[in-house]
Length: 251
Image 1 (tube, rainbow, N blue to C red):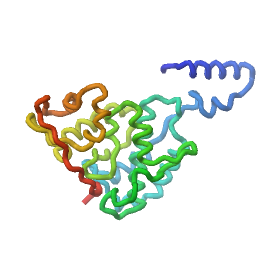
Image 2 (image 1 turned 180 degrees about the vertical axis):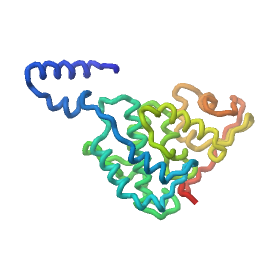
Image 3 (image 1 turned 45 degrees about the vertical axis):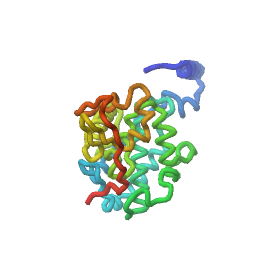
Image 4 (image 1 turned 60 degrees about the horizontal axis):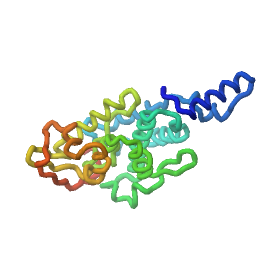
């Protein structure tokens, strides 16, 4: 575990507090010793039950268990990941939170043909954490994108066919790296979302909208080549495919 100066000071206060017989409630409530594993098993069970292998969601039957989803989200928001947790733990928490809150938004308004049938879907307050109301846009842009992990764009799902598919398992710290890599490779090589040849690359709009995230350290060509089975070059023509906002519902 990497200790910052803040961590060392807190641990020193805790040590001297215990030694003198005094309890330090602020540390017990918020400090490193209060870290606890967040439980994503309910979300994992719901995903396995209502999401197929290609990411389509059985919203019609999922609605029957919206009470369980609401209870899960209530538990998650009342027991958020600690500010002292690792980057990996925070990524897992907010990826799962974003996806679960998106599904809830659809279920609350189902049936509908597209998430864009709703007015300002990404600006609506969907959860409250530490007395702060958050929208899907807040979670994506103000939290996840600031963690310097561009693969989050392949992990969060906007309930639409052109989005990276919703996995039918929850993210966990143990599986984070594997699932991020799997999601990136699956998305880049999915011919429904990206059509790549050596001569021409028809890419998802995601690579246009968030180009800055993908090219922070490398070129877009180099980023694509990390995951594409077909390598492109500087001479490869790049265009962007129209986005299909149709609901990612099971047929």
